[in-house]
Image (cartoon, rainbow over all chains, first blue to last red; front, side, top):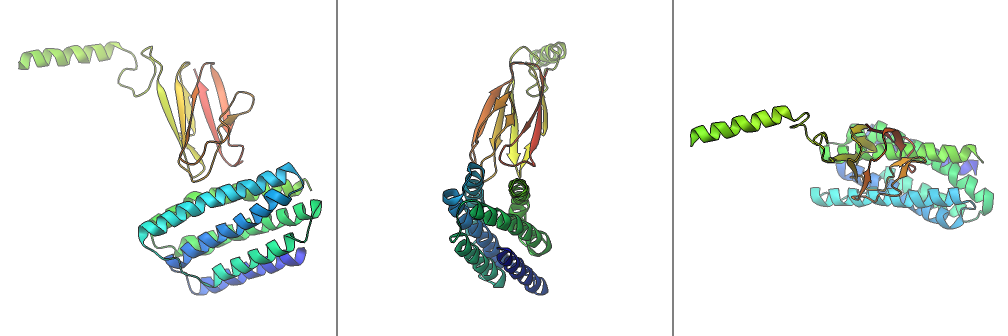
Length: 170
Length: 114
């Protein structure tokens, strides 16, 4: 379980590091935003079904709702701006980290599932916030893209706090 | 014609001066309940603190792409206001009502009813 957390953190850290060396363009940033949301939607869908407590299932459901909402708006924006999201190493690291997480979660049940899911949510939201602050916002050129990321950032903070609160009760 | 217009303007001006609070948008002081708007965007209630008169209506509109709630525990609760949706509350009892969003703990607001 801990290994997964470390693997994810390392993947994001390496991705953020490689991106910092070569700042992503707006098309890549859009792809990172959509991928980061999708990864959390996938884990949330699993938690909605597999969570052993209502609090965990509700949290999973909220992740699906909130991140789907953000993605809907992100897709609407890139469509309006006529930007085609471009795959990149950070998106790939996020995607493979997300797949690894879901694969691991599917082997777990009950309290073990809850703990692994919530631990991952805490680490994931922290890493995504770091990426937003250190890479995405400083690199974004288009004002509307920047505004969208700025506008949804507090939601990621709220999710992190919510996940930490659940974690503290386990 | 111009004299009549001037007289009319003067009359309106005086009427305005006599009515306390007239000319102030949505002040609700002229005896008629006012409608106030709070916009929820970027996880902020704008304005964060709103003062209204008893009988006034407050409409919260959610401009974020996901749901929020306007919840003053034990007093009022919008439950989920969907993205793009709104919720209306008629403030009937005077008091201070600090409220939160039950979905996002970093959101807060204050409704003051005079």
